[in-house]
Amino acid sequence: MTEIIDGNAVAAEIRAGLADGIATLADAGVTPCLATVLMSDDPASQTYVSMKHSDCEEVGIEARDYEIDPEAPADDLYATIDDLNADPSVHGILVQMPLPDHVDEREVLRRIDPAKDVDGFHPENVGRLVAGHPRFKPCTPHGIQKLLAAADVETEGADVVVVGRSNIVGKPMANLLIQKSKLGNATVTVCHSRTTDLAAKTRAADVVVAAAGVPEMIDGEMLSEGCVVVDVGINRVEADTEKGYELVGDVDFESAKEKASAITPVPGGVGPMTRAMLLWNTVKAAGDAEAVDVELP
Ligand SMILES: NC(=O)C1=CN([C@@H]2O[C@H](COP(=O)(O)OP(=O)(O)OC[C@H]3O[C@@H](n4cnc5c(N)ncnc54)[C@H](OP(=O)(O)O)[C@@H]3O)[C@@H](O)[C@H]2O)C=CC1
Ligand SMILES: Nc1nc(=O)c2c([nH]1)NC[C@@H]1CN(c3ccc(C(=O)N[C@@H](CCC(=O)O)C(=O)O)cc3)C=[N+]21
Image (tube, rainbow, N blue to C red; front, side, top):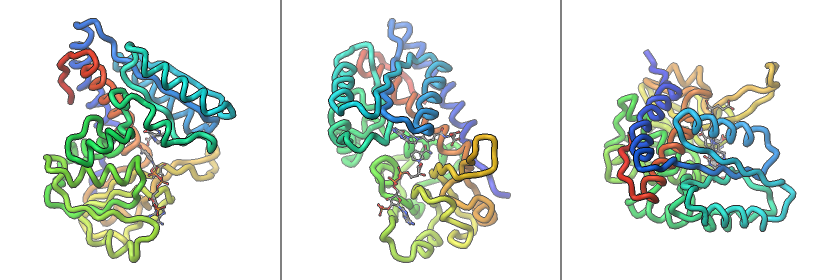
């Protein structure tokens, strides 16, 4: 029987597990606070940001919402970041990606105070991760580690293929998996659009992490019997539904399920974990900033 790994359930456990840390902060008079900054009209981005706000509310994190007209000059965004950096009541800052073309994404990432960079995208935090002593682990790959652990999937000694080399998913995923740590110690192959014979690589893997942004590109034919499949892809494809679209992953779920011993669904797999680990990083940021020792799940 193939195990369907329930990301909603594991994310709910993580949120519940944050209660102790949030209570410890409350005893010290601190309410953790996340500021989200949205500079986009994209409905998907708006949905994600509003989901992040309701998650915060559920666990007792204050969420502040900043919205900037996507046509506004980049300086408006930079000024908002500068204000949030300077505000001691704000512990975490998330600038929702993607940004409009006239905004320099790299400037945005290096402008956020690295101590408030709950996405873990600031070059200093990327450097710490690569050097093996992360401060904020990027939410999606960190969530995937927690998901694998909850499903009793050992990464130690496993051959893992990561499909995708983006700075927000593929690269940090590979970096976390090669760390000398309990949720690491894997042997990792990173594939991308110039990889030759992707299917041969994925067929040799014990664990496949699909993060290419190509709907259903990994099918059962590309997988070995008994492998574990983590589907990061969130693709809105047109469909005859109430919303006019449906969400599909980068994995062809039906055929992959025939081969895999365990697989994450879309929706309800990695997505909720990304949001849970954002809360996790925000509680950590608050503890660090206020010098309160918080236990994290
Ligand atoms: N569940 C969640 O929480 C999250 C989900 N996502 C989703 O994950 C997916 C990936 O996101 P992101 O990393 O930001 O995407 P990017 O578009 O930034 O990166 C995609 C990567 O996949 C590679 N790729 C594209 N096509 C192929 C192919 N045919 N074969 C092999 N590799 C390919 C690209 O290669 P190259 O570098 O050569 O161009 C690139 O490295 C998207 O569907 C996104 O919506 C993203 C973040 C969080
Ligand atoms: N600065 C920044 N940080 C991010 O972490 C970031 C970002 N920008 N830009 C976009 C991507 C994408 N991302 C998702 C988070 C949660 C779900 C999620 O919760 N998905 C639900 C369903 C969502 C739905 O119903 O549309 C699920 O898979 O079950 C999806 C995608 C974070 N990202």
